[in-house]
Length: 79
Image 1 (cartoon, one colour):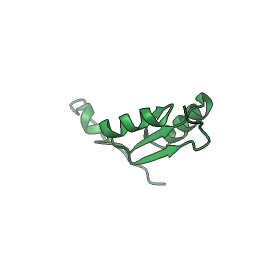
Image 2: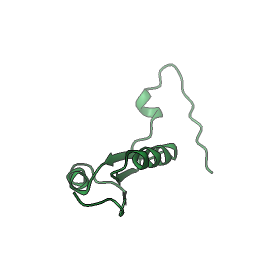
Image 3: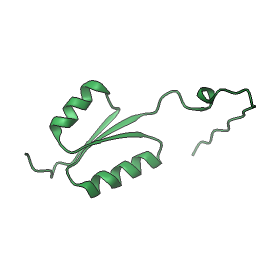
């Protein structure tokens, strides 16, 4: 596991300390419990996580903010 050390002074801009961009994961799952578990899991690993309840919302979000990966609950019944 790699670690990063950040050195700062009182004149250091916050934007210099924050990562420029983080990988984004889109989770498509209908069950709230599964959404919560996956969001916490991936966020704890440093990913930005978008969670939507169905494929239609997932497609809409794909065009707005393309993710690095998509996780789909295949057991989710079609609406």
